[in-house]
Amino acid sequence: MSEQELKALRVRIDSLDEKILELISDRARCAQEVARVKTATLAEGETPVFYRPEREAQVLKRVMQRNQGPLGNEEMARLFREIMSSCLALEQPLKIAYLGPEGTFTQAAAMKHFGHAVISKPMAAIDEVFREVAAGAVNFGVVPVENSTEGAVNHTLDSFLEHDMVICGEVELRIHHHLLVGENTKTDSISRIYSHAQSLAQCRKWLDAHYPNVERVAVSSNAEAAKRVKGEWNSAAIAGDMAAGLYGLSRLAEKIEDRPDNSTRFLMIGNQEVPPTGDDKTSIIVSMSNKPGALHELLVPFHENGIDLTRIETRPSRSGKWTYVFFIDFVGHHRDPLIKAVLEQISQEAVALKVLGSYPKAVL
Ligand SMILES: C=C(O[C@@H]1C=C(C(=O)O)C=C[C@H]1O)C(=O)O
Image 1 (tube, rainbow, N blue to C red):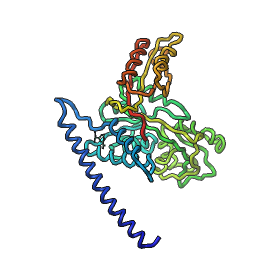
Image 2: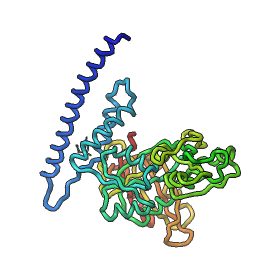
Image 3: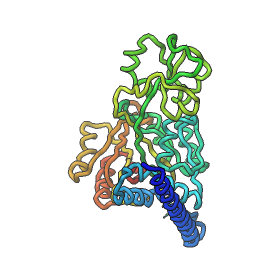
Image 4: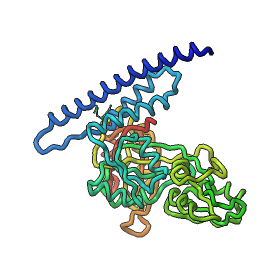
């Protein structure tokens, strides 16, 4: 390519960037107008709801449908995710609590879902995220709920039994773990590997093969593991990219998770009910009386109405020995007439039924 050609292309890019800049600014002004309308149309005593997850899901889906390349759909949606995040911040910057410390996968999930134009607050434990949301100190909380290799995150499920929360969204994140070391680590004499118990479990086979005799120490988060390694010469951490970057660690081995499709699903919790988008999921908690066939009775209405169950999890109810509650996720919105009828049918048989929320299926 000649210098001449390169110069001409750069002139073209500059002029396109000017147009993009103008268009994004136009869009941002529109969002400000939306905020004005939302505030102006309020009834007495009502507080405006600026963040609309159902609308955001529609915007992202539309972008993906209309995209013709060469950028991939996910890439394009990610760019629009950030534009929307900044536009919303002009209306009202969202405050988000997540399972910290900084550098956790939960933080990465929060950024993937809400974009970067938010005020985010790391919390030390899952229960604290719930309490922060319940106290109204933040608009939303982000917590892990299940991993494709290791299953349910029980702390999260149990917290739903203790707090009244609405699930407003979900996001899935591919989880890649690396073995990380600091600049002072003597890599041939590693005697301890720190990580969160879930991550140690997700890399169990790799650790058995490569570090069978090294002590595995479970700590409160992967980011905490990375932080500890910084000050120790004989230890390593298992954590992801964000923690590696944040604590300046380097990768001794990359992508060491036992399953290449290792993914975690996270939930956005808040106080706001989300209207239907036509492509939603619902999460409920049900407790049944302790009699034969109770689980069958619970599942029949879903089967008979062709409702797609995406997950069922059992936890001790905490209100009696050997009594259980079921966490069930299925496709549909609790305001859909069919789902409404099924939930009514179930509640006639159940000891208790609580809808945790209906929310758009993860777009990104
Ligand atoms: C602009 C709006 O407010 C927020 C910002 C959005 C956007 O930038 O597209 C979409 C939904 C809301 O979270 C709206 O409700 O349409």
